[in-house]
Amino acid sequence: MKDLQSVFAGHAASNYWGNDESLSGDGSTLAYTYNLRRELAKFLRAFRVTSMFDAPCGDFNWMRAVEFPENFSYIGGDIVASLVEANQARYGDDTRRFIACDIASDPLPDADLWFCRDCLFHLPQAAILSALAGFCRSRIGFLMTTTHLNVSDFDNSDIAPGGFRLIDLYKPPYRLPREVLYRIPDYVFPYPQRELCVWSRAQVAAALTSRG
Image (cartoon, rainbow, N blue to C red; front, side):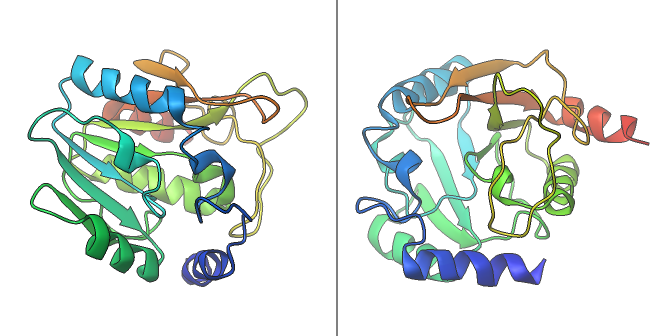
């Protein structure tokens, strides 16, 4: 998975996504995430989430505006060291810290929730499956991650690290259950429809086991 680090470090250094507000791209602006920020705050309270591992956290542009519950513990993780260092210097405090983490190969820290938005559709299949397996080995209870909606005639094709394709986590080779625990619509027209869905660690583990 070594290519992942060099590819995403290059993306950050060159502002590959071409957005003036956030190095993480159009989907990480305050305008794009207006609804998401409110809905995420509702979810955290409804599920009594007291700690979250946000990976990849990118440049923390929009997440800093979320109204977290009182005494909430936040860990932001990213494969790009420069982003981690900048975030820790600017936003780190007693309840918020940032760490270097490759979700495809590194152990995930303890938390109630792994929040993984706008990431998996940039990874090759092997890296996605490795990340999901790592989640299943962790002590994190829930995963909230992105899947696309209402897309016909696609097959979750493989890509090079750092590329992009639409992803449907309900379909092979992932086959995550459609009986999700929670969902948040997360798209702005004319971008492709997508949502953030929540699965338990047990649900993801069962899906991976069923692959044989």
